[in-house]
Length: 209
Image (cartoon, rainbow, N blue to C red; front, side):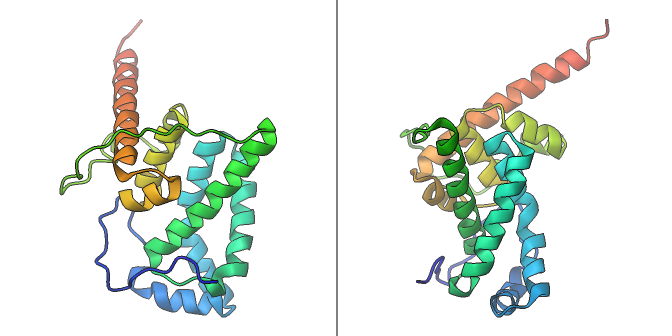
């Protein structure tokens, strides 16, 4: 069964995180699917840091995030021969596999299916300039991850997939099973909350006892 099939003629979508391989991706993918370990390592270096950050936000547990990430890459290595798509599609597939494993972890921990918040509100189309990462540009990665992890799960996922994974709104919507407008709402609410918390923190840091 083929997974991740996309139209290679489709124009690239704007993103916050640059894809390292880009024009070389097809060659690297074919080599990795054929068993080239160096090529597979290139895929890993390209996507693993963002994947691990995403899982850390979802699970609030670095060890669990690392374990799931390792399992996902084993799964990728086994199924890579069946994958067809560009680098954006590969990331979407990778994060979909990761999210499914994270949900399985939540279900095992709670002994019941996880109910994720579903915001059904809609927004108009996004403007030309993507502002999803503007709030986080001012702080370091570790602090950003810690702050994002304090948000409701739907907001944290929307922000992490948009800003850290670099997926576009439509890809995030497909992954989360939401409408694009709901993804924008969740990201906007989360970023607004983060901006307020950053402002409050900055005010406190500026006060001398």
